[in-house]
Image 1 (cartoon, rainbow, N blue to C red):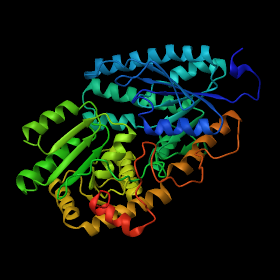
Image 2 (image 1 turned 120 degrees about the vertical axis):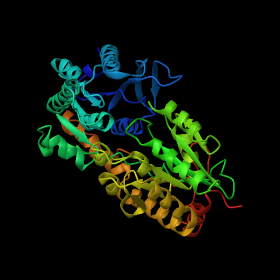
Image 3 (image 1 turned 90 degrees about the vertical axis):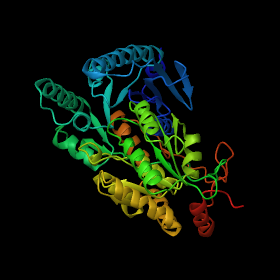
Image 4 (image 1 turned 45 degrees about the vertical axis):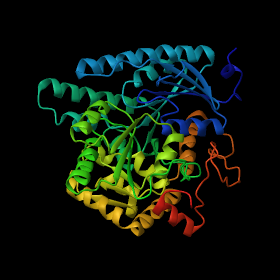
Length: 449
């Protein structure tokens, strides 16, 4: 007898499917896993392997099943093979999960919008489907390839819209990352507003907070930071154009940039960096975990949001924006609708694609430490008071309680009531309650001498 067949009192088992990133590297999905576990659910995840990852892993109460990802997609045939290969591997692993312990709910995270079919197949066994809407794939297509003009492109675009519609209509409940995504679920997906719940990807600000970096930047140097995926739609090439403007045209040789992350464009960006003569000034870290993120964002002076205004970016919540705010990192962003919702008055916004204005804003922050302190502290206050993960976690688990009929009292993100002075690695947190020390840290980004 499997555990979930033991009787009605057995906690529901949730299977989460994600193809875009490994877990726990996918911060949103990992926070969701932990929220479910904290409220008594059993949780399994199917996702691709990252470098060096095991095929099976039990981590903090979550069973993780991983498959070898398909080769990097090139062209329509490449994307089709990537989606088909990942779908088949996921379907086979779902059988392995079922044999180990029957699951009651599937949560699928896009992209791609293909796992509605797997959920439909499992529906005959009583499995229910929740869709976690991470990306707008039709808008992603336009952002990467432009408006479809040729017949083949139009067919591809229509296929994406059909897959999105099928995903919306197959799901019993939809989780949207912001109000713009919810509006699309209602308008384009035909969903009732009461069946769509906004769960923002806010950081857990009690854990994601500034530390005194072990390797602070050299005195007199300014460090810019980018954190995120490096795809064609992410605008990381704009960072290199800004650095070229700062270093070669304005003589700011005291400025360095650290680019944290990976993606389809990483090698092209590295080549562009070399062509621009910026290898001395720009560091690519590749894939980073939360331990490294804390170090890098605590030592940096200015965060960069280079996403250009596109149909996708304008409506998407950028996790990096809120992560910069969590580390009291003043930031510059191209002016996007949802980035303004997240950042409010704590960011500097410039017109999309205006490299001169973006560079001017960075120089303004470099030359005005008081402005860095004001925006950094405002950002930290805003992310704590309005964007923190804890209330989002309650809304998230509430959807599963409604779908499953299961409910266990207690917080989705427990608080032990003890304000720790160090993180799990023993690194000392900045005292955010000491206004003078906090301001000094934002100016200097290091421990007091």
